[in-house]
Image (cartoon, rainbow, N blue to C red; front, side, top):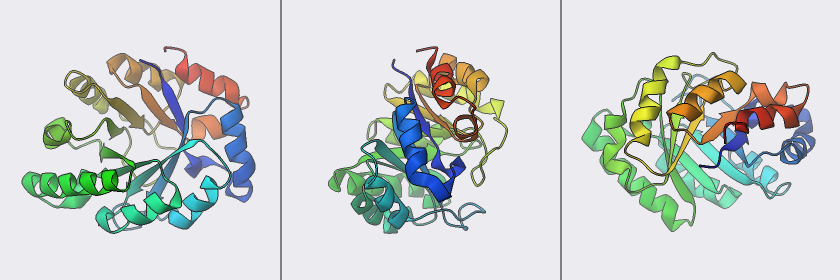
Length: 220
């Protein structure tokens, strides 16, 4: 399965975001990973649909808007209109009970599809795969966080590796891993079945960005 890499713009130089986007495209990025945080679901605030719209005007790369926010159903339309191609939401943001989450998630997946965008499910490191099994036939992209969401530059949580393997055994779609991805941790997640890697600091702080992306993909 082809390995795809999405640089996380949370780690870029925002004062020069247009040139940063061009740099990652020229270096071989497959898509842009945009972390959207609201200060409620996670303890940080980042960007909104206006910034995504500005990015859309400057690149033809796919844009994955990763919504780490409460009440994502209220915002998916804005992110769809902004030019997002893939919109992921966290099941943990949809209620306290598994059944309640599944019901809301199904409605949200339908809404994203009606907007002609690709829906993706995201889960935190502590969330079991069992919590999303009832949704896997509705999507073809699942994002597994390998750090606790909120801030970039965190260390990879190796306890997620068995979850990646468990998911790959029951899911044929794209499995993205986000958090603490380097050339070393990339090998570990790819061996367990992941084929999509989101990486921020490792790419944007690399001396040679093209080589950094190549090293992430070298197991493909």
